[in-house]
Length: 97
Image 1: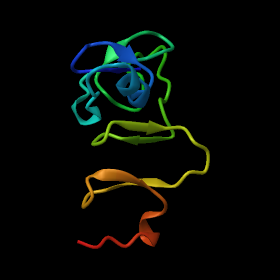
Image 2 (image 1 turned 90 degrees about the horizontal axis):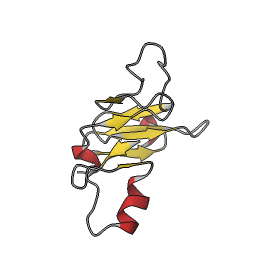
Image 3 (image 1 turned 180 degrees about the vertical axis):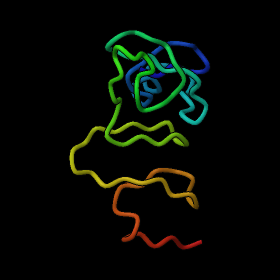
Image 4 (image 1 turned 180 degrees about the horizontal axis):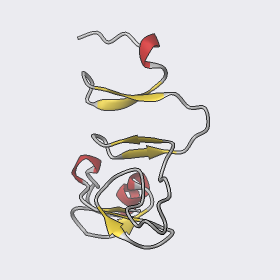
């Protein structure tokens, strides 16, 4: 779960949060996450810091965008030029400046 930096509520989805609140959850500014398995609050990462839990939060994780994705066989990468994650294979993508 991610903590909204503005209202400090933990939510599963930033998009669902944004639909139900009068403010937007800035995913680039997320400071804390909470493991749903062991409830440990921690800094954003892709693995629970609790050694007894140690689960992986997503098959894909971007520390810049604070994006986790568990979709099987999904190609996704962070584009430094766009400053966001893109769906597809990086080598198939041509970035025009």
